[in-house]
Length: 218
Image 1: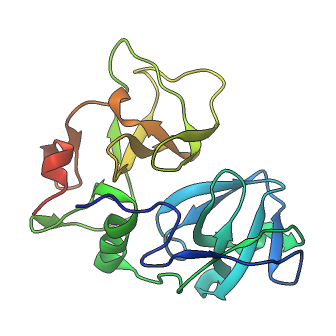
Image 2 (image 1 turned 30 degrees about the horizontal axis):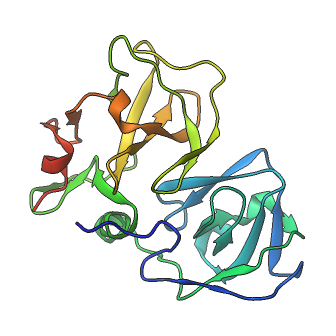
Image 3 (image 1 turned 60 degrees about the vertical axis):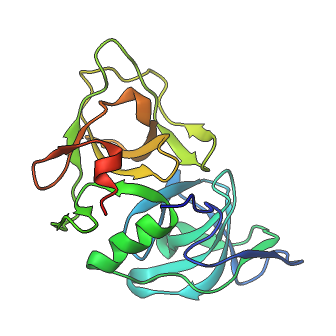
């Protein structure tokens, strides 16, 4: 699939506006909060304490959609439980946020951020669910976890000690660039890792090992 812009959700494009702190602008109060592709859906980035968020749409489960500041610099859904009025952000998102679930949620992820997702291969299989697949860092290599990836660069390193092949991690989706993969560390965060730190073939929910090209489907 063609490379997608990481600064937008769906077909949403960002536009500049002059705004300051308002009832629609918030600060993150928690140490960190995930940015998601839809309410309680795929993690696509992270906001950190003190980062700003501009609310543009209300969703289910107490989620707001809008522009995320900090190093995320993208549009997505954030839980309102970790936000308090304040902050300042001068970029808004055009369009509206996706509320897709199930198969359409995977299609939305693939249309905007991902090349592969562990439970759906277009034209081949769809298993669904909300769990990642276990994977090990390549033997002899080490890897760090990052809160954000913008399609080119990694930001907000989360690990102070690099992970090795003994680390308990599982993968969820591979970035459209093929350079990053969203992983979950056991008792740890959802975060990005460099794709080349993991095996060339990854195990999918149907039990099949695939390269990223095979995982992209038809």
